[in-house]
Length: 592
Image (cartoon, rainbow, N blue to C red):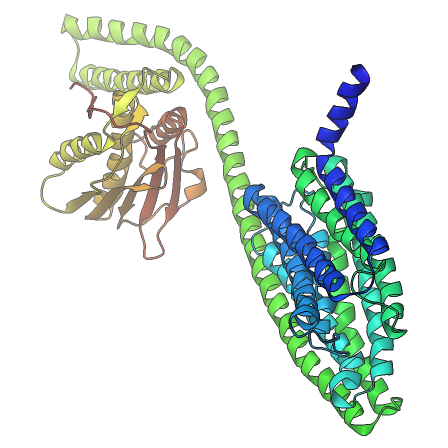
């Protein structure tokens, strides 16, 4: 019972190969028992056609059902099997419908010759290797294939055409056709063997099955051509048995392939097969002048054949030369794209490095400032209290009163500075909700514009209708907008007036705000977020405002950059991640 179950399991697993073997044995039995006749011819021609169509249908099914990375492979195989079936259909037409021997030479010999080229391209496509090339690499591979296809067309025209259509010579035609066709089949086997050697698992199994079937077909094709030349071949003879077997074998392998776990794997570090197709394409280009010189200097064929070969070389040089220029153009475009990506990557890395350095500076300074502020605050409080007590006594001279007022004024300034330092050191993430940054920005501009009456400073605010909400702390974002706008208005006030253009819009998945003023610009934009860096007069600014802004924006997952406009003035760009889900608009402004 166990043996029976094992046999049933094997039969079920290899059912397509069992069917292929059964079809081959049945055809062989008919070929051995039947004599040459019209009935045997009909049976043999349509049996061969049916097997080739079955192979084409099997590959077409895989092309439609398999993952996208395999579709080009199976589509090319479908094209190759279809050309093979077309040649067999023409053979059946002559022998069954017209009841005439297949002509020699015949146009469909060209179809038979080229049916292996799509199969070579399929094996070279390597769907078993994961491809991570840049955009345009598939087009380059297609151009390489078209160049090799054009070279094979030229080679057929250069070697075979002169004996087929220019000056008919059947013996020379058969001789050159058979050998060139044999070279083509050998090339197919070589490409399949290399693919099998560098692949693994199910793909190697598939390639090996195609190699075995292709080897059987290639050897049989050699002996079949000899039999045709000796007039010993007829349809349905034993020469057709390997042909049926090869077609059935390939169809069985194609139908079984989905069950073989065809996995795409990572390429090895040294993937030399990628350079084979371009090198062969360039070798094909370089061979054209050599063949042209041979046709002019050493070819002993009749004059029409030599002239045809020279013109074939010239036409091929024009065609393949056009492919070379097109390929170079595509490579140049890919190189420009690569350089652009490299530049963007460098800029991004530089920006991230600067952000990291800035963040570390702020963190280190925050720890230092926190301790220093507490130490300064204690004696400062004593100075303020003692000064107020002395002021209350009221028995001071005018000079003493003046000095006391200066002491109190400077102590208050020092207290404000300490408060700023503590505010800088105590930056905390805070609770974040969905915030309408547009409302906060509008409120900030209204408050600050009211502090600068006279119309010398004009603020233009433009908020796009699709400006998204962001996740953040309303109070902190309001502080950010106040600081950026106030910084710009101070610069405009020093310049005697001007305009501040504020825009808010959505860009991709980001909420982008731009603050562009018409002032004198920033002397050192790369230092504007450094702590204590300020261009304002002494006593007017501490140089901590934009540092605090930088830290808050970083805490919100955003970015802020600054540079000078070419036409003058400073430009601040703030980016926040846009909120993914829509929700009720929350102003969340300070004091709201």
